[in-house]
Image 1: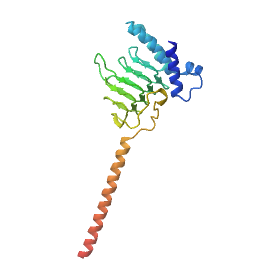
Image 2: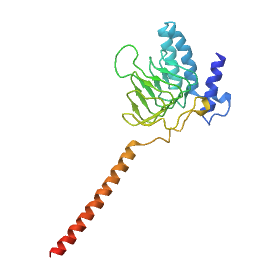
Image 3: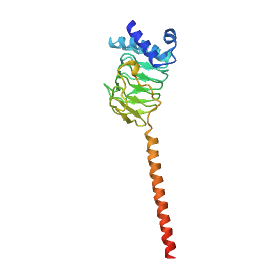
Image 4: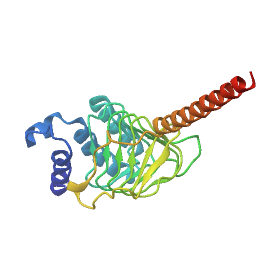
Length: 226
């Protein structure tokens, strides 16, 4: 238990430069509180004490603003930064060293039974406001851009942005396997809409130049005829 607590605290220090000391992390980080309470609720859930497990998870939601269903399976080193509005569904599975920012939803898409929430790989970064909905896998070392809505599987070492989410980088810059190498730069993601507009603008400029050249040629021809 104490080894797991040390790992959770270490994850905070490695991924949040605002963390000053252990006492501050223990007292003031709702993401850490939510994870620790979830460990208790999950152990009760596995023993089929469903009501008590849900009651504990609701207390955690009230205290932290983070809703984690007690059935969710969470690996080591999860870091929930700020955390307000985070929702993690019952059949969600989260690997090791995952980073989740505020407003993220790991949810389902309907009323189907069984596995209906995503499986998140190791070293994944899920940016603020992202929605990952459905029973599919997000591969290791993936990055999900802020506000993205992901509705299908994401390969490992990929970056996804947009609504619906589109893969914009794959095997570009590989994230390392250790804690310290997790790539948290979720502010430096490609913008496919902006890139598309730039291509369209270039095409428009090319067409305008060709039209001007054609008009100029027609003008010279008209003068020669006169």
